[in-house]
Length: 331
Image (cartoon, rainbow, N blue to C red; front, side, top):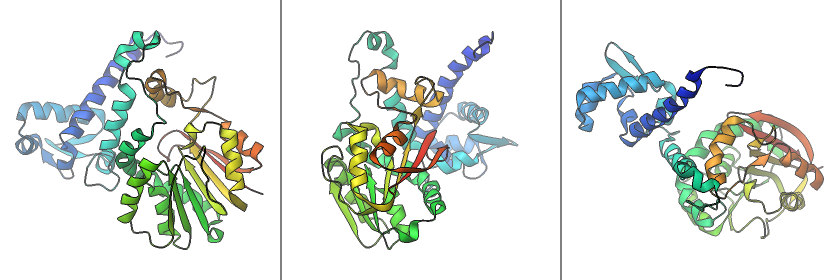
């Protein structure tokens, strides 16, 4: 909008809010489950007990948003909607999107009070109970990024020599378990807070991975990480480091020579004003007390000071949004 005298740019912000309400309503009604094949508005209305004329208006709006295609009076999911919004899909993200919206939007309707220092909907993202509740939704998110993450690991050309893997701040553990699926020879350690680890154990019990899996309940800031790792994955888990430099030193000590540390986090730059999608998505939680975003360069600087060599630095949108992927190697 800089340099433009165009009120439409501002009016489009209103449309953005409308688009979200349309999507949220469609997910709530599970409409995308009905649109895997060409379907009429009347058929949708009959199944969901809706007014047929209003259902048609709603589906037309979803089409205008790009979630649905329409032809000859019938509707069908677009590919992204079929992949991520149909609850029968392996990559279904509907519950993730709704949880994210609740987290990000809460309190923004009371901005003046927040800006004056009020504790409206105060939030501490490091709280153990939050992540225990979030584990179920994080499974869907981790499923969506597992394949591209595995592709990055394969591209490193080191996995044949990897024997011990740590998934640091693993959440439900799907990323580490996916590595175990593809490379069954590895011994996997899953580490997260005690309340989260209870959920991780439940999820792993139904997973296809066999063999050596160690479940470590603890806080990576204070507790032992284990040792002799050839690969450590830290995917969106370093935001809560009390001292990132000290944590990197612990990781360095826990790894074998030649071991790989793979970190995936969003990095802010331009004096913490970019990338815009990350800054905007985090402002709500930041104003409520959890400004946890890392600045671009923080990961690699802490790695290098701990003794790691940086082998790769890549901005990647396939890993769940605008992300900086940093690969460090212990010499």
